[in-house]
Structure formats: structure tokens, C-alpha cells
Length: 101
Image (tube, rainbow, N blue to C red; front, top):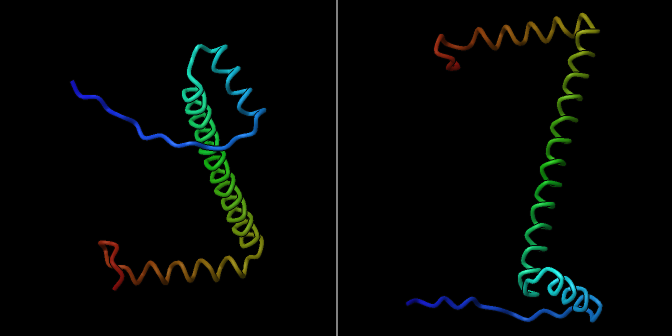
């Protein structure tokens, strides 16, 4: 039989935090360590969700800014024509396989 020993450490918390932790452990029937591990995992997942929401908001703002810039170009016929000429010039420099010549 193989016994795995998990390394541990000690952290300092306020007496109030210790008391709350002890109460949560007693009422849930779990160890204080299990309560801390679950709380930390839940916090980690929440933070990952916050980061994902921020990334989505940044993407949304980028797309809105891009759409607004294209709308401004479309509203200025000379600027739009210049952009189209530039795009066509770029496309003409590409070979049939998409490589730049």
C-alpha cells in the first residue's frame, strides 16, 4: 500500500477569520482545510470568469470602434473610394494561391 503525504504550510489569519472558518467546517461536516480549499477554488473560478468577461468587453469595444470607423469612411465618399482603390491594389499584388508577388 502506497501512502501519499501532502505537503502543508501554515498561514496567519485573524481570530475572526479562524472562528468563521471553524464554524463553517463544523456546520458543513468538513475539515477547515477542505473549507479553505473549496473557497479558494471557487474564488479562482470567479476570477477566471471576471477575466473572461473583461476580454469579451474589450472585443466588443474593438468591434464597435471598427464598425464606427468603417461607417465614417462610408459616409465620406472620397475616403471610401481611396480605401477601395488601396484594397484593389493590394488584391492585384496577390498570386492566385493568395501569396504576395
